[in-house]
Amino acid sequence: MGYASTWGSFAIFLLVISVGNAQLSPNFYASTCPQMLSIVRAAVNSAVLQEARMGASLLRLFFHDCFVNGCDGSVLLDDTPTFRGEKTAFPNANSLRGFEVIDRIKTQLESVCPGVVSCADILAVAARDGVVALRGPSWSVPLGRRDSTTASWDDANNQLVPPSLSLNEIISRFARKGFSSNEMVALSGAHTIGLARCVTFRDRIYNDTNIDPSYAASLRGNCPRTPGTGDDNLEPMDLGTPNVFNTGYYRNILARRSLLHSDQEIANSLLTNVQVIAYSLISSPFFNDFANAMTKMSNLGPLTGPQGQIRTNCRRIN
Image 1 (cartoon, rainbow, N blue to C red):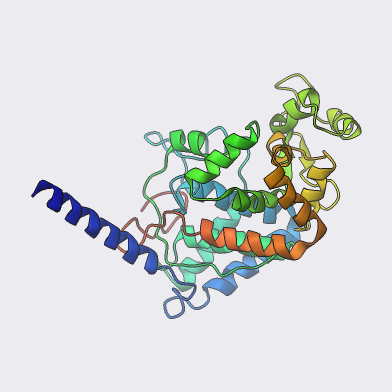
Image 2: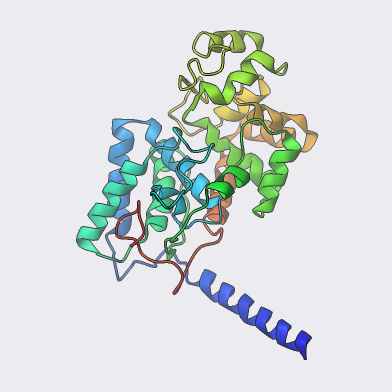
């Protein structure tokens, strides 16, 4: 009797999860806020036009939201005297950007569709549009997420992928979220755009041996060996085309000119290195795989139906 009851409860749980995920649809706002996609696109294009780096920042912001307990907008919540969220976790503090862009979009949407569009959905679409604005691939974004009413500083510290990890550790972190090693290599290609702080690549340019010596030497002037000195100094992830979404990231790996230790690690396996070589030669397989993996990422743990809320201000709960 106990077993039957437990199985029945579990079956109901699976049904609820299935129904919740089924509520996500690219057309979710077709009748309730038909301007949603065009408003987000216009705002992102304007932000990227002002600062090309913003396309990469919005993509990273979305990744850091989804990788910590699902795509629920939790990363957007500000700390309060009684609440410590994800913004100040070690991988995010003084690093994540793009919050003001999301705020501007939310303000615009609240003026035309009050209480309708979630912050989580805004972030999901903004990440896609940021990539497109930098000449990268597009993908269909399923919509209908709701916003979390909490966030976790501890989970952000434990679930995100720091640049110091080995290949096996990186594969393991992605596997916990349901991604294969092939999908991990494709998603890592996001590092073909944007900038990184000295504190994230200092160890690599002074201690790693699998780095082009001339490349390492060229970085040391802007990133001193002493911790606490120049920590926030920036260097492009892709020295050649940091503002164009292309396959330069994979060519850098093959030339041992990856900025981050974790990126160069991808060459340390025959299986992943074959994929790196394939992507370096032609963009279409990378673009296709990246778009598919981003679609999969956007389905990580969404809140739907009665779960969560639609925040009126993305920085705080209602």
